[in-house]
Length: 243
Image (cartoon, rainbow, N blue to C red; front, side):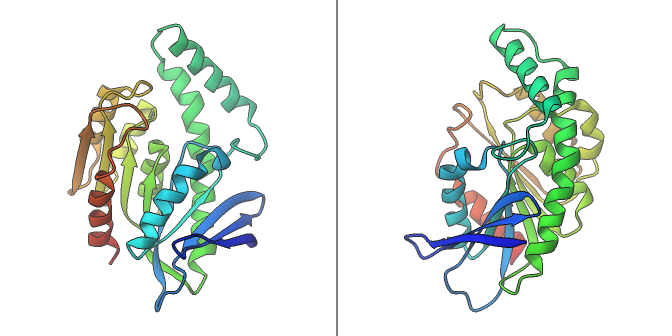
């Protein structure tokens, strides 16, 4: 891991860009902290620069609550090398949506499974590098989407203590077996009128999770319309499980 740039944000948060091999990422930590901070991995749908305005707000909220936050670019996203298989599957998805046709399981599997297979090991390698730093510690949480990445990470990563999942992306039905293996506490956010989300699939996935503690917050509105007050509930959830 190599840090390539840093800046202090207006609220004193230290923002550092890094690369892990060829993977770009960003780490946000308290400006001054008496002890190492628990880490929250921020998920997003890809395009780190495009997503930055939303990510930095989420990161600042994490730091204000006493945590550190980090994120990395997804495979095939942003400035990373394109993946022809993902691009083709994404184009097929957009064509189906534009034509008002159902999105088939075959399209979802071609789009999501290769992404999950590559992204989750990269996130685990990121954890290895970040948790070796003196200003960071476990336990670790995951927050955001792509929700299928969060599902797989919750199954295979023992350092993950809790997760906030955004039910706003497709999940291959073959991953429901993995969802039943998830046992960590979950806080799931669902936008009821999300134009790009299969609401029933999201509800079925929530039902499949094997966690003894799982909470679903459903709000009216589209994909990017999560109410600001949900941030308070998320902060309380992380406070319960990361401290």
